[in-house]
Length: 171
Image 1 (tube, rainbow, N blue to C red):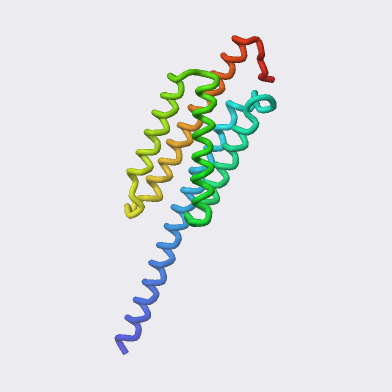
Image 2: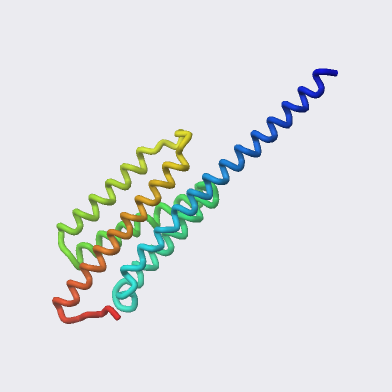
């Protein structure tokens, strides 16, 4: 008779631990999703040139950010991973294109440097790490800061370029 209450207690404890673990997992997954959202802010510095120059660039930022949110919302599904990484790569190509076309090789080097730093930071977080979700969430914030920096750089390059040629397109 003594064994039955202990067995029930253990099952209850196991259920509560499972619920706590699921809650922790969902909480950390939500942190991954929420920490991806600041990437949308990278479009803001480019909006003054949206109609004439940066409309495709801004759309790539929005699509890539949305795919990243979706990637983490679907618990890092492989089906979403391919479009997510592809969109991120296209975003990088736009960063390089605009920094070269409206700037010079020095600006391209800056873009490559900050992207390389963020990439190395991402690769240095193993998925087997028990703190992966938290560390990757912090990495998202660093990545968003990098993206905003590059967009601000490109915006300034476009402003300087168009002012020098007398073709100011910012509205």
